Structures are given as C-alpha cells and as structure tokens.
Length: 606
Image (cartoon, rainbow, N blue to C red; front, top):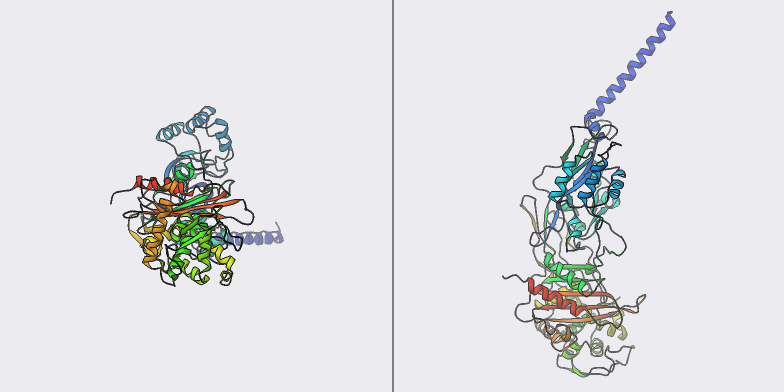
C-alpha cells in the first residue's frame, strides 16, 4: 500500500470518528433535554422509546364533576367498560371466543368484528342506541375476562355525559358540553400550550357551566390505560396494561349545583305528557331564587353536538316575545305611576280602535275592572294603560322587575380573583328597540301587551315571579352552591345574592296587588279550567305571543306563576312552549299544573 492510499484511509477514519463524535454529543444533548426543547416537552430516550411502543386510552379527563343539590352525579359517573387496543395484525382470539364476546355484549358478531377490525387507536365499546360507553355488569365483566382475548380489557371508565344520556333525566343544557376548540384553547391556555402541558386536541368547555367554570374545573391531568406494544404495535406478552394518571387527592373538583334531579325529571315528564317538542321549563326556589330545575327542548347529546333533531342551545336563556306575561310589567308601571287601580273599569268591545289592535276575544269582554282585565288577559284594557304611560317608565319598571338585563348569578371577583358569570349564555332581552321607539303610540300599545320588540327569557320570567313574592326585591338566581376538592375540602362557596335595579324597586304594595291579580287568573280567569282544581292553590299569568316574520302561523305559549298561593310559596315556575300552531289552545297552564303537582308530591318536610 503506497503512502497516498494510506493517507486517504487515515483521513477517512478521522472523518468517521468526527461524525460519530457529533452524533454521540447530539445523543447526549437530547437525553439531557436539550436541542431547544422545553423541559416539559423533552423526554429521555428511554421514555421516548416507551411512548413509541405503547397505546393509551383516556379513562378520565380529570375535569371537575357536577352534582345535583342532593349530591347525585350529573356528570362523570365511573362505569366498567370494554376497551380494545390495536393489535398490529395479531388475532384477538378464535371465532368461538369472539362470538362469545358478542353474546356477552348483547350485539351481533358481525358488528363486533367490524368494530374491532377498524380500530387504529384505543377505543371503548359504545351502546348502539345512545352512542355512549356501554356499562358492563359484573356478570358481563366476568365473562369477558374469562375469554382472555388479545388487546381487549375491562377498564374503569369515566363517561362524562353517558350516564345522563342513559338515565331518565336528559343531559342538562345548563351543564353544557365540551368540544375541541383550538383557537379558544390557545387564547386561554397559550403558555400551557407552548410548554406542552396542553394539546390543541384537548377538549374545552363550550356551553353552560362547562364554559363558565372552565378555568376552575379543567383539572390537573388525565388518567390513561396504557398497553405496552412492540414496534409493530403488537401487545407484549407478560407486560399487559397499566393505569397511569396524576396522584393528587384534591382533584377532580366537585361542583355542587342547585339542580334537583327529581324536579328535572318532573319537568321532563310534564312536557312529554303534553307532546311538547320545543320550549323550556324553569323552576326556582321561591325563597332563594335557586334554580332547582332548568329544562330545554329539543334535547341534545353532549357527545354528538349538531345531530338532526337536537338543539344544544339553552332555550331557558334565550329571550323571546312574552305575550301577555308582560302585562305584569304594564300593570306594575300603571299602579306605580298612579294612573290606574285594580278597581278601575273599562269597556272592551273587541277592538281598540287604533293601530289595528284587537282583543283576543271576538266581540270583547264588555265592562270589566283592571283586575278582571288582567285575569282575562284583555288586550284592549292593557293597550289603553300602556298609552297612559311614559315609555321610559315601562322600561324602568321592567328593569326594577329584573327584565331587559342579565340577572343570573355573577361576581366581579371569584375565588381566583377574576370575574365570573355562571350562565354566560343568558340573553338580556329588551323592552323597546330604542328609547325613541316607545314614543310611537302603536309601538307602546304593542309593548304593553308583550309584543313588538319585547323579549324575555324563561329564567327572567320565573325570577319575575320570585321578585313579586319578595315584595319587589330582585334576586339573582344561582345554579351552583359550592365547589369542593375531591377530598371534601371547600374551595369556594357561592352565596345567594340580589340583582338590584339602578332605578330601585317597586313598592311592596304594588307587588301585593300583582299577586292578587295573578291569583284571579286561576280562580276566575284564563287558567281557571286548567288549574282551578289543583291540590295546591296556584297563581300566575298566561301569555300567547304571535311570531312575526317567517313564522306568522305560529305562536309561543307561556305560563308563569307560583305555588302554593296560600301560606308559604315554595316554587316559582315559568313554562314556555315554542312554535305552536296559531289558534291552538294554550297548553302552558296545563304543563305548569302538572309540574306543580309533581313538586307538591316531592315536597320534603322542613
């Protein structure tokens, strides 16, 4: 070998040594967490190798759990579920074993095999009817474990909404749902995202309490079922599956709501009995204005938002025309201004004579007092009262009664020092489209009977009744009473509060006169037939709102009231039935009566 060749070989060996040296240095740098990556994002080679050879299934997101006022779970119930992991082409078992698994699950072998064949990531078996994780019985679990199938296991699974879907109580719109929302997640958790603690695919609260309490209930991490595999994702014999998650006794948080599951179910049953497909029922505690029931229809599936026939919007918080329910405000304003009394008499001929306004009763009511006009919901009398009033007075009186503004519980500084509103979706509603609009007589008379631009939510309507029961003091309905750590320690209390108007309140005497008029609605007015025979004496106000625009042949039907009307009132209830055929009998009083009957039966002794 000549000197030239020897020199070339030497140079090549030096080059290779340099390359290997750089690679070794780079390897050490990666192992130590370098390379420009954050400490949380980096991992040693051993950990990376482990992650590359494992499949993980999220068993619990770690989000806070919601309970009803009796401590019964509204979300996050732990079940035993069937989990399946990819097998990298390995057979899971014999045909006989798979048929036995299908039989244990109560499904067909074809459906089961198609599901197993399609698995590319760990999944749980879902019930065909609800689309949520199927709950296994002890007998099913025993049968499945005995089969010894590859890549199949029974795991403790927290199906956040599945229990609600399968129980008699429908998922609550007030609780809401979670979904992937990368843009909002980045806005809220930008630092955590950059540090690798949060992923853009993580779920985030999108509605209801899931939305308003997002920053508090997110938790400290998920719990996973991890199956170890080889490089081809084939399960490694003898290693099996392990459960991995945060070990923090304080989490997940427990959010105690004011909702009563029995009341919620009673509202559902009443609406179902009368075939109601769209609308809302709000039940408030008459003493505290706590929300003990809040039903919205159509129902929704929090695991499958937007599917046909569902509606994730909370209709209890959407402002719509209140119809004659607004006559409570008109009468309050007229009594406060001293322009009428309950005993003043009017003559209703069936037409007002101006603005094309007519009474709902063809031929009119004849001569009647203001109290009788309220009980019979006479449009002519209330149009006349509205024309006597300054439009600003109508707006101010509505505000004094908690209308035209958000009244749900809120604070400027919660336990974390930040503002909090529990029901963010609550719409404020409106009285007039603008301050100038009410100066027009036609607009003002339409407003006086609850039409034109008036908009009220069912929550505000129910709270209006509580305001009258409290002599004119507006309460702020709350839907959460406290938040506790998982080990029982108190994180925060949500105290009952008021929502006073900037204009003050109505006089207690005015509130008393309105309660008297509402009792007359049931004893001698529009709701006598539907409610007069109820075991609890009841009081309230019915309403029918004409829907203009694209739905001229449809009405919304209302009834708001309280019971018992003698002694100590226990509940205030608002019932809204939406998109009812124009001219159809108002079914809202009957629904209200059924809800009140159920509440009486559920009444707990003090």
